[in-house]
Length: 164
Image (cartoon, helix red, strand yellow):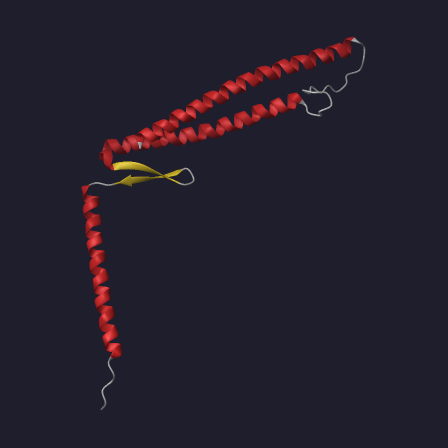
């Protein structure tokens, strides 16, 4: 299982790196768009006009504000990065926990992933295997005793009361 955790860690780090490069790219684009807007505002001021709203849009008449879209995209990228960082921290803590437990208990300790992103620890050594075998044997005996008791009670129920 440690290899699985290591793989998860590497995948999450790769995703964070990819998101970081997108954030840098869109921060640059946002700056470039902002510079264009500032130049337009300066041109309006130079012409002696009062400031007017300037909407940077990819196509005229689309009604989309590119600056706002880019800002929102950067926020979405940061949210995803924070989410992935949270997952990465959990995986790293799982790895550390598993390493510590394996130092103490050996390879008998493992991690089992369960739905919802959570995990359980697994432990199996010679003593637990012996306990399981004893449990299985006792369950079999219990089942046999139950059947014996059930057959005895069925026999008593089928006998007719004697006449006195």
